[in-house]
Length: 50
Image (tube, rainbow, N blue to C red):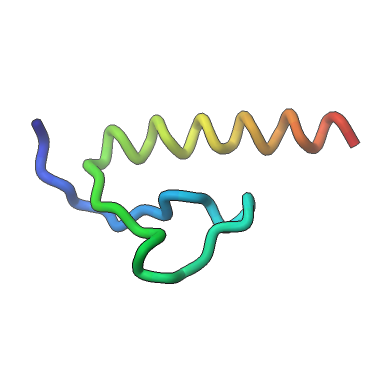
C-alpha cells in the first residue's frame, strides 16, 4: 500500500466526469501515471474511430 498523493478524477472529465467531490479519489503517483495512460489510450481509440 502506498500513500495517496494526488487527487484524481474517478470518471475523467473528458468522459463526462465532473469536478464534484464525489468524483475524486486519492491515489499515489505511480497509479495516477498508469490510470492516465489508460485514459489517454481510450481517448486515442475514440478519436481514431471518428
